[in-house]
Length: 195
Length: 195
DNA sequence: CTCATAAGTCTACAAGTGTTTGATTGAGGG
DNA sequence: CCCTCAATCAAACACTTGTAGACTTATGAG
Image (cartoon, rainbow over all chains, first blue to last red; front, side):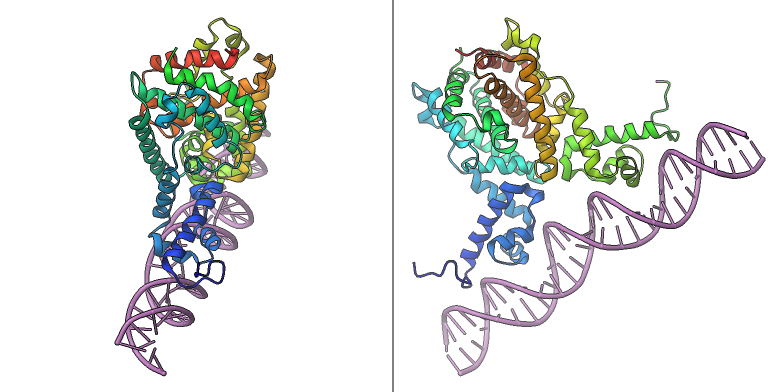
Protein backbone atom coordinates (compact mmCIF):
# COMPACT_ATOMS: atom_id res chain seq x y z
CA UNK A 1 0.00 0.00 0.00
CA UNK A 2 2.69 2.39 1.03
CA UNK A 3 4.99 1.25 -1.75
CA UNK A 4 5.41 3.27 -4.91
CA UNK A 5 4.39 1.10 -7.83
CA UNK A 6 4.33 2.97 -11.11
CA UNK A 7 6.63 5.76 -9.98
CA UNK A 8 10.30 5.65 -11.03
CA UNK A 9 10.40 2.66 -8.74
CA UNK A 10 12.49 2.66 -5.66
CA UNK A 11 15.40 0.36 -5.61
CA UNK A 12 13.95 -2.94 -4.55
CA UNK A 13 15.34 -6.26 -5.65
CA UNK A 14 12.19 -8.29 -5.14
CA UNK A 15 9.93 -5.88 -7.01
CA UNK A 16 12.34 -5.57 -9.90
CA UNK A 17 12.72 -9.29 -10.14
CA UNK A 18 8.97 -9.76 -10.31
CA UNK A 19 8.67 -7.06 -12.97
CA UNK A 20 11.25 -8.79 -15.13
CA UNK A 21 9.48 -12.13 -14.71
CA UNK A 22 6.17 -10.66 -15.77
CA UNK A 23 7.65 -8.87 -18.75
CA UNK A 24 9.42 -12.05 -19.79
CA UNK A 25 6.21 -14.03 -19.68
CA UNK A 26 4.51 -11.57 -22.00
CA UNK A 27 7.44 -11.52 -24.39
CA UNK A 28 7.90 -15.29 -24.49
CA UNK A 29 4.20 -15.87 -25.09
CA UNK A 30 4.19 -13.43 -27.98
CA UNK A 31 7.48 -14.21 -29.64
CA UNK A 32 8.95 -17.40 -28.21
CA UNK A 33 12.36 -18.04 -26.73
CA UNK A 34 14.45 -17.00 -29.69
CA UNK A 35 12.15 -14.22 -30.77
CA UNK A 36 12.13 -12.42 -27.44
CA UNK A 37 15.32 -10.50 -26.74
CA UNK A 38 16.78 -9.82 -23.35
CA UNK A 39 16.87 -6.11 -24.10
CA UNK A 40 13.20 -6.16 -25.04
CA UNK A 41 12.27 -8.03 -21.87
CA UNK A 42 14.32 -5.62 -19.79
CA UNK A 43 12.69 -2.60 -21.39
CA UNK A 44 9.27 -4.03 -20.64
CA UNK A 45 10.28 -4.16 -17.00
CA UNK A 46 11.80 -0.69 -17.02
CA UNK A 47 15.38 -1.80 -16.47
CA UNK A 48 18.43 -2.57 -18.55
CA UNK A 49 19.32 -5.89 -20.07
CA UNK A 50 22.11 -6.48 -17.63
CA UNK A 51 19.77 -6.77 -14.67
CA UNK A 52 18.08 -9.73 -16.27
CA UNK A 53 21.27 -11.71 -16.13
CA UNK A 54 22.09 -10.40 -12.73
CA UNK A 55 18.83 -11.66 -11.28
CA UNK A 56 18.37 -14.82 -13.28
CA UNK A 57 21.87 -15.82 -14.30
CA UNK A 58 21.05 -16.20 -17.96
CA UNK A 59 18.25 -15.96 -20.45
CA UNK A 60 17.86 -19.69 -20.35
CA UNK A 61 17.37 -19.79 -16.60
CA UNK A 62 14.91 -16.94 -16.84
CA UNK A 63 13.01 -18.90 -19.44
CA UNK A 64 12.95 -22.00 -17.29
CA UNK A 65 11.52 -20.02 -14.40
CA UNK A 66 8.86 -18.41 -16.55
CA UNK A 67 7.83 -21.73 -18.01
CA UNK A 68 7.70 -23.43 -14.64
CA UNK A 69 5.51 -20.67 -13.27
CA UNK A 70 3.21 -20.67 -16.26
CA UNK A 71 2.91 -24.44 -16.21
CA UNK A 72 1.85 -24.41 -12.60
CA UNK A 73 -1.61 -23.28 -13.67
CA UNK A 74 -4.30 -25.82 -12.84
CA UNK A 75 -4.98 -28.57 -15.34
CA UNK A 76 -8.33 -29.13 -16.99
CA UNK A 77 -8.21 -32.79 -16.08
CA UNK A 78 -8.92 -32.36 -12.39
CA UNK A 79 -10.14 -35.24 -10.35
CA UNK A 80 -13.47 -33.53 -9.91
CA UNK A 81 -13.94 -33.03 -13.64
CA UNK A 82 -12.83 -36.47 -14.71
CA UNK A 83 -15.02 -38.36 -12.29
CA UNK A 84 -18.14 -36.32 -12.76
CA UNK A 85 -21.02 -37.94 -14.60
CA UNK A 86 -20.95 -35.18 -17.22
CA UNK A 87 -17.17 -35.20 -17.44
CA UNK A 88 -17.17 -34.65 -21.21
CA UNK A 89 -19.34 -31.56 -21.03
CA UNK A 90 -17.46 -30.03 -18.14
CA UNK A 91 -14.05 -30.56 -19.65
CA UNK A 92 -15.25 -29.42 -23.07
CA UNK A 93 -16.45 -26.16 -21.58
CA UNK A 94 -13.17 -25.49 -19.84
CA UNK A 95 -11.17 -26.55 -22.86
CA UNK A 96 -13.01 -24.20 -25.17
CA UNK A 97 -12.63 -21.36 -22.72
CA UNK A 98 -8.95 -21.98 -22.15
CA UNK A 99 -8.13 -22.07 -25.86
CA UNK A 100 -10.11 -18.97 -26.82
CA UNK A 101 -8.21 -16.15 -28.44
CA UNK A 102 -6.53 -14.11 -25.76
CA UNK A 103 -7.02 -16.67 -23.03
CA UNK A 104 -4.04 -17.05 -20.75
CA UNK A 105 -4.47 -20.19 -18.62
CA UNK A 106 -2.50 -22.27 -21.10
CA UNK A 107 0.22 -19.69 -21.57
CA UNK A 108 2.85 -22.15 -20.46
CA UNK A 109 2.01 -24.49 -23.24
CA UNK A 110 1.85 -21.66 -25.75
CA UNK A 111 5.27 -20.48 -24.73
CA UNK A 112 6.62 -23.93 -25.23
CA UNK A 113 5.10 -24.18 -28.69
CA UNK A 114 6.38 -20.82 -29.78
CA UNK A 115 9.79 -21.70 -28.45
CA UNK A 116 10.10 -25.08 -30.08
CA UNK A 117 12.70 -23.82 -32.52
CA UNK A 118 15.26 -23.50 -29.77
CA UNK A 119 16.64 -26.82 -28.70
CA UNK A 120 17.24 -25.95 -25.09
CA UNK A 121 13.86 -24.28 -24.77
CA UNK A 122 12.21 -27.34 -26.26
CA UNK A 123 13.89 -29.59 -23.73
CA UNK A 124 12.69 -27.43 -20.87
CA UNK A 125 9.18 -27.52 -22.29
CA UNK A 126 9.27 -31.28 -22.71
CA UNK A 127 10.19 -31.79 -19.11
CA UNK A 128 7.52 -29.43 -17.85
CA UNK A 129 4.77 -30.91 -19.98
CA UNK A 130 5.82 -34.38 -18.98
CA UNK A 131 5.51 -33.35 -15.35
CA UNK A 132 2.09 -31.92 -15.98
CA UNK A 133 0.99 -35.11 -17.66
CA UNK A 134 2.14 -37.22 -14.76
CA UNK A 135 0.57 -34.88 -12.26
CA UNK A 136 -2.71 -35.29 -14.08
CA UNK A 137 -2.38 -39.04 -14.04
CA UNK A 138 -1.78 -39.23 -10.35
CA UNK A 139 -4.55 -36.78 -9.59
CA UNK A 140 -7.35 -37.83 -11.82
CA UNK A 141 -6.84 -40.77 -14.12
CA UNK A 142 -6.82 -44.46 -13.49
CA UNK A 143 -7.58 -47.71 -15.23
CA UNK A 144 -6.43 -49.34 -18.42
CA UNK A 145 -4.38 -47.16 -20.76
CA UNK A 146 -4.96 -44.21 -18.47
CA UNK A 147 -1.71 -42.60 -19.55
CA UNK A 148 -2.66 -42.76 -23.21
CA UNK A 149 -6.15 -41.47 -22.62
CA UNK A 150 -4.95 -38.54 -20.58
CA UNK A 151 -2.33 -37.79 -23.20
CA UNK A 152 -4.91 -37.82 -25.96
CA UNK A 153 -7.01 -35.25 -24.12
CA UNK A 154 -3.86 -33.20 -23.70
CA UNK A 155 -3.17 -33.57 -27.42
CA UNK A 156 -6.67 -32.47 -28.30
CA UNK A 157 -6.26 -29.42 -26.10
CA UNK A 158 -2.93 -28.68 -27.71
CA UNK A 159 -4.36 -28.99 -31.21
CA UNK A 160 -7.26 -26.76 -30.35
CA UNK A 161 -4.95 -24.16 -28.91
CA UNK A 162 -2.64 -24.30 -31.91
CA UNK A 163 -5.48 -23.90 -34.36
CA UNK A 164 -7.35 -21.24 -32.41
CA UNK A 165 -4.58 -19.12 -30.91
CA UNK A 166 -1.57 -19.61 -33.13
CA UNK A 167 -2.92 -20.28 -36.58
CA UNK A 168 -6.27 -18.65 -35.94
CA UNK A 169 -8.03 -20.97 -38.33
CA UNK A 170 -11.29 -19.10 -38.90
CA UNK A 171 -13.54 -22.13 -38.55
CA UNK A 172 -12.28 -22.66 -35.00
CA UNK A 173 -11.27 -19.19 -33.93
CA UNK A 174 -14.62 -17.64 -34.83
CA UNK A 175 -16.84 -20.60 -34.02
CA UNK A 176 -19.50 -20.21 -31.37
CA UNK A 177 -18.19 -21.62 -28.07
CA UNK A 178 -21.48 -23.44 -27.63
CA UNK A 179 -21.08 -25.23 -30.93
CA UNK A 180 -17.56 -26.32 -30.11
CA UNK A 181 -18.61 -27.50 -26.68
CA UNK A 182 -21.47 -29.52 -28.11
CA UNK A 183 -19.18 -31.26 -30.57
CA UNK A 184 -16.34 -31.82 -28.15
CA UNK A 185 -18.27 -33.06 -25.13
CA UNK A 186 -19.07 -36.56 -26.44
CA UNK A 187 -15.60 -36.84 -27.96
CA UNK A 188 -13.94 -36.16 -24.64
CA UNK A 189 -16.32 -38.45 -22.84
CA UNK A 190 -15.37 -41.18 -25.29
CA UNK A 191 -11.68 -40.55 -24.83
CA UNK A 192 -11.93 -40.74 -21.08
CA UNK A 193 -14.28 -43.66 -20.66
CA UNK A 194 -13.87 -45.69 -23.82
CA UNK A 195 -16.75 -47.05 -25.93
CA UNK B 1 22.03 -45.37 -58.53
CA UNK B 2 23.75 -44.38 -61.72
CA UNK B 3 24.00 -40.80 -60.59
CA UNK B 4 26.94 -39.59 -58.56
CA UNK B 5 25.49 -38.84 -55.18
CA UNK B 6 28.21 -38.59 -52.61
CA UNK B 7 30.93 -37.86 -55.13
CA UNK B 8 32.21 -34.27 -55.48
CA UNK B 9 29.16 -33.60 -57.66
CA UNK B 10 29.51 -32.15 -61.10
CA UNK B 11 28.52 -28.57 -61.57
CA UNK B 12 24.84 -28.56 -62.36
CA UNK B 13 22.49 -25.75 -61.43
CA UNK B 14 19.30 -27.79 -61.32
CA UNK B 15 20.76 -30.56 -59.19
CA UNK B 16 22.33 -28.13 -56.77
CA UNK B 17 19.12 -26.19 -56.44
CA UNK B 18 17.21 -29.34 -55.63
CA UNK B 19 19.85 -30.36 -53.09
CA UNK B 20 19.55 -27.02 -51.33
CA UNK B 21 15.77 -27.29 -51.27
CA UNK B 22 15.93 -30.75 -49.75
CA UNK B 23 18.49 -29.74 -47.17
CA UNK B 24 16.40 -26.70 -46.30
CA UNK B 25 13.33 -28.83 -45.75
CA UNK B 26 15.20 -31.06 -43.33
CA UNK B 27 16.67 -28.10 -41.48
CA UNK B 28 13.40 -26.17 -41.23
CA UNK B 29 11.55 -29.24 -40.00
CA UNK B 30 14.13 -29.83 -37.32
CA UNK B 31 14.83 -26.31 -36.17
CA UNK B 32 12.27 -23.91 -37.62
CA UNK B 33 12.81 -20.74 -39.59
CA UNK B 34 14.89 -18.89 -37.05
CA UNK B 35 16.71 -21.93 -35.81
CA UNK B 36 17.96 -23.10 -39.18
CA UNK B 37 20.89 -21.10 -40.48
CA UNK B 38 21.74 -20.49 -44.08
CA UNK B 39 25.23 -21.87 -43.55
CA UNK B 40 23.84 -25.01 -42.03
CA UNK B 41 21.42 -25.51 -44.90
CA UNK B 42 24.20 -24.94 -47.39
CA UNK B 43 26.47 -27.43 -45.70
CA UNK B 44 23.73 -30.03 -45.80
CA UNK B 45 23.60 -29.55 -49.55
CA UNK B 46 27.36 -29.63 -49.93
CA UNK B 47 27.75 -26.02 -50.98
CA UNK B 48 28.55 -22.69 -49.37
CA UNK B 49 26.05 -20.31 -47.87
CA UNK B 50 26.24 -17.80 -50.66
CA UNK B 51 24.82 -20.17 -53.21
CA UNK B 52 21.61 -20.32 -51.23
CA UNK B 53 21.04 -16.64 -51.75
CA UNK B 54 22.27 -16.89 -55.29
CA UNK B 55 19.61 -19.46 -56.15
CA UNK B 56 16.73 -18.31 -53.98
CA UNK B 57 17.32 -14.62 -53.44
CA UNK B 58 16.97 -14.72 -49.68
CA UNK B 59 16.31 -17.05 -46.79
CA UNK B 60 12.70 -15.94 -46.66
CA UNK B 61 12.04 -16.80 -50.28
CA UNK B 62 13.70 -20.15 -49.80
CA UNK B 63 11.45 -20.76 -46.81
CA UNK B 64 8.31 -19.89 -48.75
CA UNK B 65 9.26 -22.31 -51.48
CA UNK B 66 9.97 -25.11 -49.01
CA UNK B 67 6.67 -24.57 -47.19
CA UNK B 68 4.64 -24.48 -50.37
CA UNK B 69 6.19 -27.74 -51.52
CA UNK B 70 5.75 -29.46 -48.18
CA UNK B 71 2.12 -28.35 -47.87
CA UNK B 72 1.25 -29.85 -51.21
CA UNK B 73 1.23 -33.32 -49.63
CA UNK B 74 -2.15 -35.05 -49.73
CA UNK B 75 -4.54 -34.55 -46.83
CA UNK B 76 -5.82 -37.35 -44.62
CA UNK B 77 -9.40 -36.19 -45.08
CA UNK B 78 -9.82 -37.44 -48.61
CA UNK B 79 -13.22 -37.93 -50.08
CA UNK B 80 -12.66 -41.66 -50.14
CA UNK B 81 -11.71 -41.81 -46.48
CA UNK B 82 -14.44 -39.55 -45.20
CA UNK B 83 -17.27 -41.31 -46.99
CA UNK B 84 -16.17 -44.84 -46.25
CA UNK B 85 -18.24 -46.84 -43.78
CA UNK B 86 -15.19 -47.31 -41.57
CA UNK B 87 -14.08 -43.71 -41.95
CA UNK B 88 -12.95 -43.43 -38.34
CA UNK B 89 -10.71 -46.47 -38.52
CA UNK B 90 -9.19 -45.53 -41.86
CA UNK B 91 -8.44 -41.97 -40.86
CA UNK B 92 -7.17 -43.05 -37.46
CA UNK B 93 -4.70 -45.38 -39.11
CA UNK B 94 -3.38 -42.72 -41.43
CA UNK B 95 -3.31 -40.15 -38.67
CA UNK B 96 -1.27 -42.34 -36.38
CA UNK B 97 1.12 -43.19 -39.18
CA UNK B 98 1.52 -39.60 -40.28
CA UNK B 99 2.28 -38.35 -36.77
CA UNK B 100 4.75 -41.09 -35.87
CA UNK B 101 8.24 -40.03 -34.92
CA UNK B 102 10.23 -39.46 -38.07
CA UNK B 103 7.20 -39.44 -40.34
CA UNK B 104 7.34 -36.81 -43.04
CA UNK B 105 3.92 -36.43 -44.69
CA UNK B 106 2.95 -33.60 -42.36
CA UNK B 107 6.31 -31.87 -42.58
CA UNK B 108 4.70 -28.71 -43.87
CA UNK B 109 2.65 -28.36 -40.76
CA UNK B 110 5.60 -29.17 -38.54
CA UNK B 111 7.70 -26.54 -40.22
CA UNK B 112 4.99 -24.01 -39.64
CA UNK B 113 4.74 -24.88 -35.96
CA UNK B 114 8.45 -24.77 -35.39
CA UNK B 115 8.63 -21.45 -37.19
CA UNK B 116 5.82 -19.76 -35.33
CA UNK B 117 8.23 -17.51 -33.49
CA UNK B 118 9.09 -15.69 -36.67
CA UNK B 119 6.33 -13.33 -37.68
CA UNK B 120 6.81 -13.60 -41.43
CA UNK B 121 7.11 -17.37 -41.29
CA UNK B 122 3.94 -17.59 -39.23
CA UNK B 123 1.99 -15.58 -41.80
CA UNK B 124 3.13 -17.85 -44.58
CA UNK B 125 2.07 -20.87 -42.56
CA UNK B 126 -1.35 -19.46 -41.70
CA UNK B 127 -2.16 -18.88 -45.33
CA UNK B 128 -1.05 -22.34 -46.37
CA UNK B 129 -2.99 -24.11 -43.63
CA UNK B 130 -6.09 -22.10 -44.38
CA UNK B 131 -5.81 -23.21 -48.01
CA UNK B 132 -5.46 -26.80 -46.94
CA UNK B 133 -8.53 -26.59 -44.75
CA UNK B 134 -10.62 -25.16 -47.55
CA UNK B 135 -9.32 -27.71 -49.99
CA UNK B 136 -10.43 -30.44 -47.59
CA UNK B 137 -13.86 -28.92 -47.24
CA UNK B 138 -14.46 -28.73 -50.95
CA UNK B 139 -13.12 -32.20 -51.53
CA UNK B 140 -14.58 -34.27 -48.78
CA UNK B 141 -16.81 -32.59 -46.25
CA UNK B 142 -20.41 -31.49 -46.43
CA UNK B 143 -23.41 -31.01 -44.21
CA UNK B 144 -24.10 -29.06 -41.07
CA UNK B 145 -21.05 -27.53 -39.39
CA UNK B 146 -18.82 -29.24 -41.91
CA UNK B 147 -16.18 -26.55 -41.55
CA UNK B 148 -16.00 -26.96 -37.80
CA UNK B 149 -15.92 -30.72 -37.96
CA UNK B 150 -13.13 -30.75 -40.51
CA UNK B 151 -11.24 -28.20 -38.47
CA UNK B 152 -11.56 -30.30 -35.34
CA UNK B 153 -10.06 -33.30 -37.10
CA UNK B 154 -7.29 -31.04 -38.27
CA UNK B 155 -6.82 -29.82 -34.71
CA UNK B 156 -6.68 -33.36 -33.39
CA UNK B 157 -4.05 -34.21 -35.98
CA UNK B 158 -2.11 -31.12 -35.05
CA UNK B 159 -2.25 -31.93 -31.36
CA UNK B 160 -1.15 -35.48 -31.97
CA UNK B 161 1.73 -34.32 -34.07
CA UNK B 162 2.78 -31.75 -31.53
CA UNK B 163 2.71 -34.24 -28.69
CA UNK B 164 4.34 -37.10 -30.59
CA UNK B 165 6.90 -35.35 -32.77
CA UNK B 166 7.69 -32.10 -31.04
CA UNK B 167 7.24 -32.74 -27.36
CA UNK B 168 7.68 -36.48 -27.65
CA UNK B 169 5.38 -37.10 -24.72
CA UNK B 170 6.29 -40.69 -23.84
CA UNK B 171 2.72 -41.89 -23.45
CA UNK B 172 2.00 -40.97 -27.07
CA UNK B 173 5.39 -41.24 -28.69
CA UNK B 174 6.03 -44.76 -27.45
CA UNK B 175 2.46 -46.02 -27.52
CA UNK B 176 1.62 -48.97 -29.74
CA UNK B 177 0.14 -47.67 -32.99
CA UNK B 178 -2.62 -50.26 -32.69
CA UNK B 179 -3.63 -48.91 -29.30
CA UNK B 180 -3.77 -45.36 -30.55
CA UNK B 181 -5.76 -46.38 -33.60
CA UNK B 182 -8.25 -48.29 -31.49
CA UNK B 183 -8.83 -45.28 -29.24
CA UNK B 184 -8.92 -42.71 -32.01
CA UNK B 185 -11.14 -44.50 -34.52
CA UNK B 186 -14.45 -43.99 -32.67
CA UNK B 187 -13.46 -40.47 -31.73
CA UNK B 188 -12.88 -39.50 -35.32
CA UNK B 189 -16.02 -41.25 -36.42
CA UNK B 190 -17.91 -39.20 -33.85
CA UNK B 191 -16.30 -35.99 -34.98
CA UNK B 192 -17.18 -36.62 -38.59
CA UNK B 193 -20.69 -37.97 -38.24
CA UNK B 194 -21.96 -36.63 -34.96
CA UNK B 195 -23.69 -38.71 -32.25
C1' DC C 1 43.46 -26.59 -77.46
C1' DT C 2 41.16 -22.24 -76.21
C1' DC C 3 38.29 -19.50 -73.94
C1' DA C 4 33.76 -17.33 -72.76
C1' DT C 5 30.49 -18.29 -69.38
C1' DA C 6 28.09 -20.12 -65.84
C1' DA C 7 28.89 -22.41 -61.18
C1' DG C 8 30.84 -22.04 -57.10
C1' DT C 9 33.78 -20.00 -53.37
C1' DC C 10 36.42 -16.54 -50.32
C1' DT C 11 36.51 -12.49 -47.70
C1' DA C 12 34.08 -9.18 -45.55
C1' DC C 13 30.48 -6.44 -43.38
C1' DA C 14 26.79 -4.55 -40.84
C1' DA C 15 23.45 -5.74 -37.63
C1' DG C 16 21.89 -8.47 -34.17
C1' DT C 17 22.45 -11.61 -30.05
C1' DG C 18 23.50 -12.91 -24.89
C1' DT C 19 26.75 -11.85 -21.59
C1' DT C 20 30.54 -9.40 -18.78
C1' DT C 21 33.39 -5.73 -16.62
C1' DG C 22 33.89 -1.70 -14.19
C1' DA C 23 31.88 2.51 -12.79
C1' DT C 24 27.69 5.14 -10.68
C1' DT C 25 23.97 5.94 -7.85
C1' DG C 26 20.78 5.65 -4.22
C1' DA C 27 19.25 3.94 0.50
C1' DG C 28 19.87 3.01 5.15
C1' DG C 29 22.77 1.84 9.45
C1' DG C 30 26.53 3.75 12.46
C1' DC D 1 26.29 13.36 8.77
C1' DC D 2 28.84 9.86 6.53
C1' DC D 3 29.98 5.73 4.74
C1' DT D 4 29.06 1.22 3.13
C1' DC D 5 26.90 -1.94 0.29
C1' DA D 6 23.48 -3.38 -2.69
C1' DA D 7 20.95 -1.93 -6.88
C1' DT D 8 21.58 -0.19 -11.26
C1' DC D 9 23.64 1.31 -15.46
C1' DA D 10 26.67 2.28 -19.70
C1' DA D 11 29.93 0.44 -22.74
C1' DA D 12 31.92 -3.09 -24.76
C1' DC D 13 32.95 -8.04 -25.82
C1' DA D 14 32.64 -12.22 -28.33
C1' DC D 15 29.83 -14.36 -31.27
C1' DT D 16 26.44 -15.47 -34.85
C1' DT D 17 23.46 -14.12 -38.38
C1' DG D 18 21.98 -12.97 -43.37
C1' DT D 19 23.82 -10.84 -47.22
C1' DA D 20 26.98 -8.54 -50.93
C1' DG D 21 30.89 -8.01 -54.14
C1' DA D 22 35.00 -9.68 -56.06
C1' DC D 23 37.35 -13.69 -57.14
C1' DT D 24 38.31 -18.55 -58.91
C1' DT D 25 37.35 -22.71 -61.35
C1' DA D 26 35.19 -26.16 -64.09
C1' DT D 27 32.40 -27.03 -68.26
C1' DG D 28 31.40 -27.50 -72.89
C1' DA D 29 31.29 -25.19 -77.55
C1' DG D 30 34.24 -23.75 -81.42
